[in-house]
Length: 501
Image (cartoon, rainbow, N blue to C red; front, top):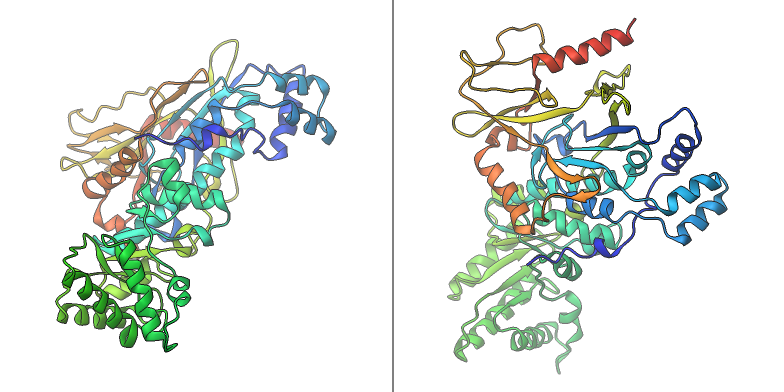
């Protein structure tokens, strides 16, 4: 069921840095500039978060909805007029503004690597300039959270991971879109109800400490008041009876009281579909081992143990290495804020200008004293090169439309830009998968929206079949290479030599 509606109801056109408007105003008012000239911008990033081996592309649906819905309202125009930086002719132009360009992109949920164009926007210069900030905001945020979620899910080693982070997110949008991204990255669900409503993500939740603390027994003893709380909750939720056992004392009160309630349900003939305990504080490895034994000794081997409390891939790995007995993890602040590395760093760089009279595509390159900041110029295709077993051995940049034939006799020769002098670089028995696909043409969508399960399963399938396990480890992952066709490499070098004259 497709419910991705929140962003479609919002006009985010004014979500931009002012310099995009000042440049657009200058383009518009310069008589030497043909504002119908089409330019191309690439979205790419330079470094994987947390020193990982890859990242996960997320946020494309929101980029698409934003571009298709762009328009300036009368209120927007009046505000811009009040700023005093823009000519009246330019403001009149904005009244009828809409995005009419083309967009090519990786499918959402694609595993991606540094310095390859995940989105390419080709449009008249003003249109292409104005869309930078919102595109980057969506891609940077959701790709960051999806990537972090994937790391946490992999650490959980098959146990469910649920997003518990809304209250620690940077605001409501960060919570909602963060939940979406976490689900793409492999989380099993979210506690954020609005994310479930908007994006058809499974939601789940149990109780807070306040529920347990509310109850007071006749003898004013916390053990008996906790038991009353558990009985009350079990009465309302017999088929989802997860009891929070760390309000007072996990092993002396919480778990024994939970066992009493589970036994009472059993004696009453209630066969719960899902029951167990949640622990939200303390030494989780130690407490879960003790709690598991207590539950098993009481005959409740099916009782689940859920843990939460400042978890991430490293704490989860540690808990499991110590023998922690956990069925699922609720992960909050360190997931929803990507606490260990909260900036993704995707950028939006001009890569080509198309001459409006001749149709010639002129590649553009940004040069820097910092070698890592030199851009890959021109319109290009990105291929994922896979071996005979379907494992991705590298990605390959080619000039747009260039013939890349992996079946040539002797193998396909390529250039490693880090070792261009070597003549031994050959792909043998490989296939090439074209990654960028048309998303928008002439301001109109050319593909249907994908549902969340399709996007999420794309991530899962790639991790299982095409991404090497060595790239998925947290420490010192194997590097995935971004190679170039000889034609593309020579084009880039020609531009660099030209700039060096």
